[in-house]
Amino acid sequence: MNIARKLNNWRKYRETVNELDRMSDRELHDLGIGRSDIRRVARSAVGF
Image (cartoon, rainbow, N blue to C red; front, top):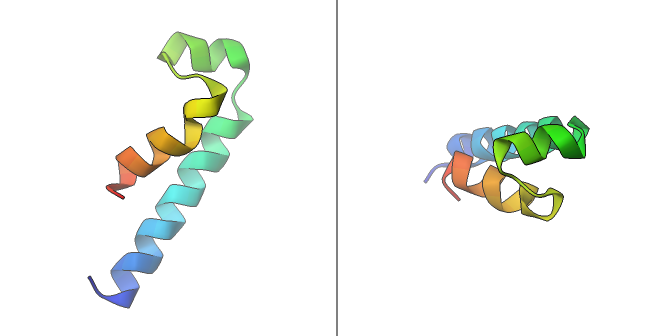
């Protein structure tokens, strides 16, 4: 994997974590995500 792709994946990961982190616990619950699962979900979304 080249550097540009790694940086792009890292940026997408951080954006996903930040977006999910801004959600309320109720919104996360509606999506079936616990607050402790945010990083795992973000890694899965980016393909880490």
